[in-house]
Image (tube, rainbow, N blue to C red; front, side):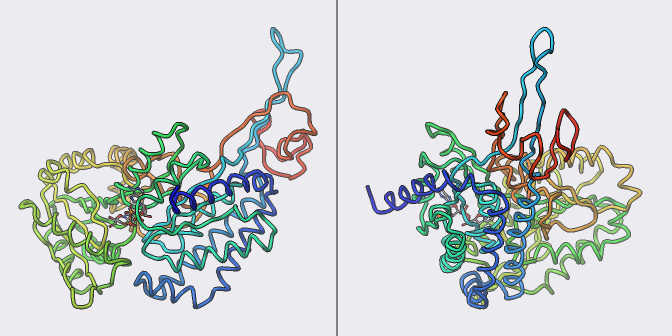
Length: 492
Ligand code: NAP
């Protein structure tokens, strides 16, 4: 065996051993452990902030905000565990005298799946990396985690991994509950996904990377789920009345959203679909002005910067695409500014390459001649994380068919906002039809993300004293349960 194979085997076997005890750690103790991780991250102070800034070019404000989001989501999962109702305890009491056959007593709840492999995201060095949402949700569910650190920020990953290990020690939890593998190159990720002890995978990144891992996981002797959050162009559909009345304000907020964080967000609005009605020319003009005036920023790695230049140039190389305004080349500082292209609806529909994500501060305006053509463009869209409608309340009320078509294409539908800025809360859906994610039934943001790493199990006719606390008649944890089809906290 090579050194890398050894290292991965050791991490996964250790995780499997740790699972045997970690899965039985009571929810309240797991909650305290998650809060401790947050405290340890806070204790890293400015060292962490400066390390992230040095490795990713992200500005201080963004890094501090992302650090707070990271500790905030750990605390949210802790709240979930303390409440305890998340296990979805469901009880159908038996009826031994039912005729013609007795009804069994069935009691169901969610349990952890086992060791989870997490691929740290390049664009979120804290909130979606070693100690990010995937790790927090897997640990909350009772699963050990092995992280494949993203090669763009190894020192950051190392620092937060140390914070998790300190928290493990403070709670005397097994070492194997968390491990970090830092090896750039596809081999380590492939070995982790293929390892027999791996039971699920969380991933954020490119469609190519995500799909390679989905394929690998499905070809294992024991196939496992890969929850991959991949590319999305997050279309913004602007209806005529909004365009007529608000084109200046809409252009301003869209360019700000496209350019936010150098466009390195999975919810970046990469497509703007509208009709050539009153206000269209002024809208395009305003976009040009805003692009010219927008600040530049450096991207999180040279590789991602090069990809951005390559992919945006590719879009502009199509003769059907004209440039509204483009600031793709500022090599002296390494900073990129936004770029916006323009294409006719028929050309967009005919050219599949224009439907692909250009990761960075890029967007493409699709100009439709009629409402019917706009509906055709919507029909041609692939699955998305988000879709936004810019409309007046009155015109939205008359477009129920369009709303229904848009819902069929995305995981989150916004009215008059911008898709960047993902709230971490219970009602958030961050995941959409393929290719936005590999399984649109789940979210990778918010506490529902825990559902990716747990599975339901039923106990039939089990003695009370052998049932988990959540399923006992007296409800000792005082959680919400679905008992004989009614939600209750009462004792049975
Ligand atoms: P990526 O190339 O998909 O890589 C993400 C992680 O997956 C890395 O740890 C990478 O490891 C691993 N990986 C990728 N392909 C793999 C394969 N075939 N087998 C095993 N492991 C694999 O994403 P990235 O490095 O963050 O950025 C590259 C591009 O992805 C960007 O330019 C952008 O287009 C896109 N992206 C999209 C989003 C989004 O939210 N939609 C977010 C980030 C990036 P190694 O590199 O060490 O092999």
